[in-house]
Amino acid sequence: MVENVRLYSDERIDDLLTKNMKIIQSKQVFCFSLDAVLLARFASLPIKRGRIIDLCTGNGVIPLLLSVRTECPIDAVEIQERLYDMAKRNVALNGLEDRITIYHGDVKEALTFLRNGSYDALTCNPPYMPVVGGEKNKSSHVAIARHEILLTLEEVIRISSKLVRPGGKVAYVHRAGRLGDLMTLMRKYRIEPKRIRLVYPKPGMEANMVLIEGIRDGKPDVKVLPPLIVYKENGEYCDEIHSIYYDDRKEE
Image (cartoon, rainbow, N blue to C red; front, top):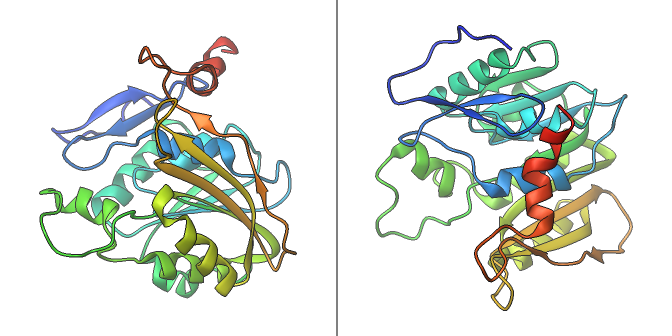
């Protein structure tokens, strides 16, 4: 762990709750949320041989979390300069420069600096909200992360199909209401949906998130996994969520 990584005045260092890892965050710029944590646990990864990439990486939270599940090198792409800089510092803060490489660039143009078909697994927590007018978040950093201002869902899926090899796995987290769009676009770009898990805030409520994984040029056969419920009726985390956040601390 590197302790002398610089911070901006609006930044803080939080406990990532796994393997003594820390993460730089800023309420004004970017803070990760449960969706990133769930995606990092849901995605299928090669363990010792292969290469992994995370698109729309933000402050690098997903590569950090993936690094405890695999020994493979991990690349990540972020278009916003401030978030790219934060992700680079987060990698340095955790001493992972030899395992995680952060690229500053546009996901749509990824093939200008990354090789076609060179990845075995890809993750992405893309912007959720289409741009339909009305008020967006006042912070441009947060607005770009949450709204399809610079990158649409179709653009994410199109480039994903080009970056992974045939047989490579692609995993996304998104709003449950976009499940139809996800499946349609994945098939359009030859990523066959294979695993789906819906995430529910509480028992009896509608799903608000979906985790979906597909295989480039895979055969049709989708598995719908058991539902994941975040909170019990009393407001406490359900056992699985509690385990995701806290079990790794028992191993330290």
